[in-house]
Image (cartoon, rainbow, N blue to C red; front, side):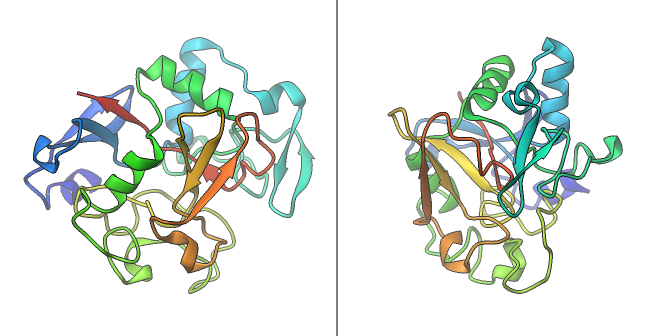
Length: 229
């Protein structure tokens, strides 16, 4: 079904890179050519990395992680949702991976031979090659493209790829979970807003600057990746 949804735009085609589905951004958009992950990185993507490398995340080393409400919960790690509930293995490929530190994310990217987008690249992708002025990524209708608690009582992150994509074939760039991006410094920036944020934060100008070792609120942020072509 997801493959068929991607085919609505014949200009782009899906490729596989580091196990995750990616879409190539054509050079006509006047930017260094990129392939971008169609969905936010899933628990299944991270599971393949862990199985291949034996990697242990910072939350696993510490023995706990912060869940919704700002409280530490013992035993929570990347296998759990934002509420600290264990995710079924059969659902690993459906939900964005959470409870990671920026170091965990960078180690995954090194293994998968991908990288995080810069904030400039992320905005470019959100705005469909800087051609659109949509309030949200792909539409002015929040219900069409974003998961957000302002219009439905969802309480937590949702499955990736269930809303409509933007023109470039990218899902969930508005809402669901914040997405980690680089800034060219030791700081990182989160983009796109989450399911609990005000709709005003779901546009391309919304941002949340965090320290490089910041992990406390990682129950509401994930990431997507890019690679240079």
